[in-house]
Amino acid sequence: MTTEELQSQAVREIEAAGNLEDLKNIRIKYLGKKGLVQDLMNAMRELPKEEKPAYGQKVNVCKQAIAGALDERQKALSVLELNKRLEEEKIDITLAGDQRTYGTMHPLMMIQQELEDLFIGMGYKVAEGPEVEQDYYNFELANIPKDHPARDMQDTFYIDPNTLLRTHTTAIQMRELEAAHGQLPIKLICPGKVYRRDDDDATHSHQFMQCEGLVVGEHVTLADLKGTLKFMADRMFGEGRQIRFRPSYFPFTEPSVEVDVSCPFCGGKGCSICKGSGWIEILGAGMVHPHVLEMNGFDPAKCSGFAFGVGLERVAMLKYGIDDIRSFYTDDKRFLKNFNRFD
Image (cartoon, rainbow, N blue to C red; front, top):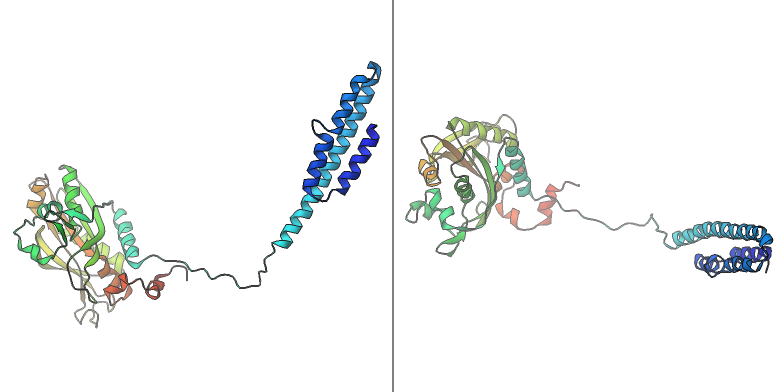
């Protein structure tokens, strides 16, 4: 078969190919290592020397023509197969789509993140600790020995005599103070879950969340504590909040105070939420007890500190007007939908 005859035959088969698989087989038939074009090249060995250049040139022209025809047909078949697939997989966009629902941030997590962002911006670090805690860190290092009456205030879930579910995130503060080995300064907050034996109702829960703060350094005063809490109240409840201290008692702070904020609902004028007083209690605080500093390796003659603890549910209830603490733990989608960022 001459080169012209082979080229003509190949072009007819290429044009008749109905799909890419047939075209692949034609390519192998003609241009493969054992294909018909290679047979023509092998036949050149039998020719006289003077005829070989002209014959080789014809074979190359034939090979290039077949390859060009194959490429053109491949492009055409690719378009045909793509259009066919698009037609078969066509979606009617006028039909109603599936309704997708999106989750949202839980309000307690929203409050926690707000507090973390607030205090990180003031140079605090966020510290974490175990929820299953040792009595030593939960009570003793916080100046609450085994016979201390303050233990009666915190009915505790004990696992064994020395292991319990932490009753406050003060346990994290004690771990951080111990780990500091007397090095100053210390600025941290400790958000997390805590547990106490309690009867669940609209304002009480056996499980709730706290965020405690601790600052220890040189010349730290009660005025520093008040300024910090005023800044926090402004950011959490709106600018212009007023705060006030009332004397109180906590075993790990001395002096200790209860902290009230001017009611964000009535601006301090008095309403049903603040019971006409114009003030709402939000947290407990005080100066770190000198004995707590001593037990953790600090010299109270050279340093001082303040600590505070706020209940996240308390803040969320005030900030978002929630009247039942149980709403945070019932997994009611209708409640959570109120905080949906995508609606």
